[in-house]
Image (cartoon, rainbow, N blue to C red; front, side, top):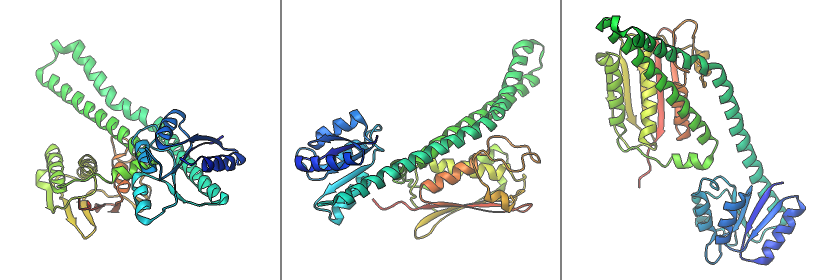
Amino acid sequence: MKRILVIDDEEWLREMIQLALRQKGYEVVEAENGAVGIEKARKILPDLILCDVNMEKVDGYRTLSSLRSEASTAAIPFILMTGLADNAGMRHGMELGADDYLPKPFTIDALYAAVEARLKKSQALRDEAEKKLADLRDNISMMLPHELRTPLNGILAYGEILAADAASLQPAEIAEMGQIIHESGKRLERLIENFLIYSQIELIGADPQRASALRKKQTAFPRKIVETRAALQAEATGRSADLKLDLSDKPVAISEDYLTKIADELIHNAFKFSKAGTPIQISLFPSELDLTLSIADHGRGLGTEHVRRVGAYMQFERKMHEQQGLGLGLVIAKRLTELHGGSLIIQSEQGVGTTVIVRLPLAMPA
């Protein structure tokens, strides 16, 4: 049985709503003002909240803001009821996180329609989140054991040799084994980091409030981030001479951490899947509405079907080419871009190379 919390300082209206909703099989809890409503919401965690806007002590907007600021109540569907449904008030309520408005006076049919629509949407979001988690578990169960064991086996094997035979080994041999252990550890670190980030962004994508909050972050100087990450990866692969940069600057609507992650993954792939001596061209340029990041290599490229099937835990042509990791880098970049209202396009031709184009919305002026 779905539980609905009704917050209104007019007793007769609460009684009317309660009777109507109970006839439909809902459990109804009443609160006579916003302060009481907040406490009851925290305690019972209802499936839906109906709240009047104009109340003494704590009005509907403050009630909504308070509940949206707490993790346990932030995702509860919230309908504001008001006799003053002007555009400014409705916009303010939506900015605070209201799911719908129910103008007073309303009919019983309008009440039923609003409640049922919100509950259905909430259930659909929960089903989507559960499906994504189920898919994630299935993919992890197939791919993760192998991907974890590969670097872990290297660490354990060479660690065992060093522990048992250090006295008989030459310094060069010890150094070589130490380097292999270090590289295996970094590979394991990257794998775990990508797994955690992918899990996080899939959950954010299923929560409209969290996704909306994500888009309010900004990076004032994206050029510096792209330039720094490109230089570091070029140096790490010994290919600084292959790096070609053409970068402009404009504030963009994404956090520095997530922009860094997108740049890291795409630049990493460009160096990883192309040969030394071939150029990596990275461009950053603004238009009227967005900022475009373009990363082009002259590597082996992807076929049309491979581009279409970009998905989580998918590695392309694994039997033909040795690869490391879960193949999550491109997917993480794509999902992060989409969560911020942008787009990621892959242009690729086998044997010619790949260009990845990321468009992110510009930051709104403060």
